[in-house]
Length: 249
Length: 249
Image 1 (cartoon, rainbow over the protein chains, first blue to last red):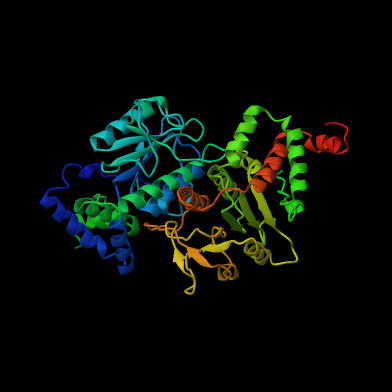
Image 2 (spheres, chains in turn purple, cyan):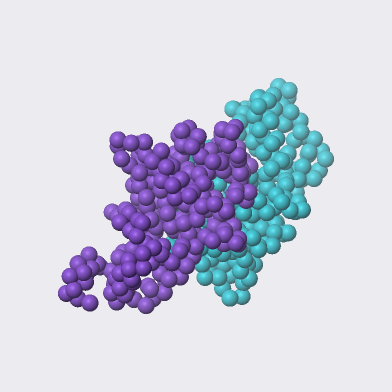
């Protein structure tokens, strides 16, 4: 079972010095249960992690595809994956993710009473993302780019739909631009995880070789470090409770 | 069932004018059974097809992976796929290839009495290919490139091994260079079809934007046109026999 990343509790408080100090104390405590090797690996990865580009999957229902996609993002250092489940519950396949789900942040939109796609779009907009749809037939009013021409100065979310139908028309209509992957064959569609791989490999390469400030902030790194420590340290809930109660330090 | 491409019978004779004329007559005959729409599609694809870069899969046994890989090559216009079956019979998954197997040329190496990898290497070398291994731990003596730095002036075969073990050491040792895909996560390997997609998308983009003569020759186009016509025209064997016997023209 994969636990959804919970960062809501920190929202709005992460700039406060007192809170940062609290987190640092907790990290120091939990860090006692993390090996030096793991710590080094975590620091290396924190410094090459990005939220500047993010992936949105709408109603992707093949577990094999969804899991390979997640693994691809992890390999490329893309931290956030937004999963909209209007019709299809997103299930991960442990054999395919190879543990990748442990290190990425899944943001799930699966409330039955609301339009989950609209909710995801709203949240990404509020967080300053431009929205880019992958669509075989882009609406005329949207500019179309490929992975080399897409402007990346703004934080960017790339949206992929189901293997058969693509994104819902309303979702495409809510986007700022379309992305097209050049194809040169009889077959006019890549497998989903291949599309995601080609797209994000190209975009990650571009931001790494640009002046764009694509890395996590110090505050984001601190929070992610805590999440990752928690995924490594067994019985961390118990340990943290004891720590909070002053029974161990 | 996928039929292996048979081009051996034409080897060595394709430059002869008489033979070319014979082929043209046959194409004209079979072309009567191909719609204008299909003909146009075929011409478009013949002119963007390439054999300048080619894929070699050694002992890949997950049908899902192998099939997605083949579909990726078809989408990118990569015509030849070399399949070495030392231990694993290569099986295609029709649901994943989506008909892609119809349009690419599979070259299989699966004789039990010989070293199939060595045979594939030998044939590619004889055909003027440089051999590039994808390997997580490249041997020290081989130069290592990424998809942007790999020299592409020479015809190039990229070799991928099994998902778990990679290429056999002897196969890597027979190569001229190694290719490494940059990764920035905890997970240090992409899914096979994702690796192939990222690699070939980048290489195809590069040759398309270069002075390299990457297209098929007129003779190659003629042969491939015949193969494709044969895959479209039902009962082409019967029709061709009748044509050869002079019973229909």
